[in-house]
Length: 73
Image (cartoon, rainbow, N blue to C red; front, side, top):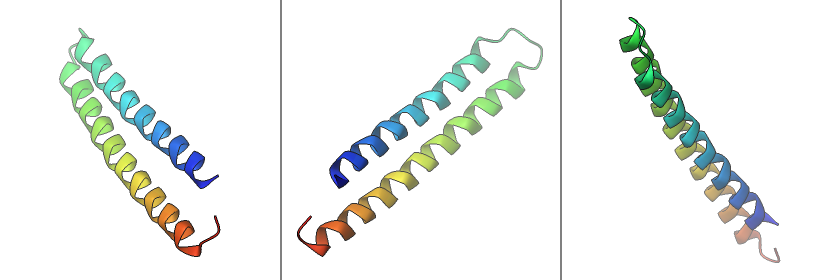
């Protein structure tokens, strides 16, 4: 059961990073005069999504190791 939860969290983290990349691509494809601002928002979104994904992966790894140390699961 815990293994499935870890897999779902991994999938969510991959999705989160892909959405950050998508936001960056929208900013890069823009022809507006404020393109620089959109690219900055895209880089910020990508950075935040990568940091959040790493945090979630670390937290899920700690939870999985805590469950495995209980034994019987």
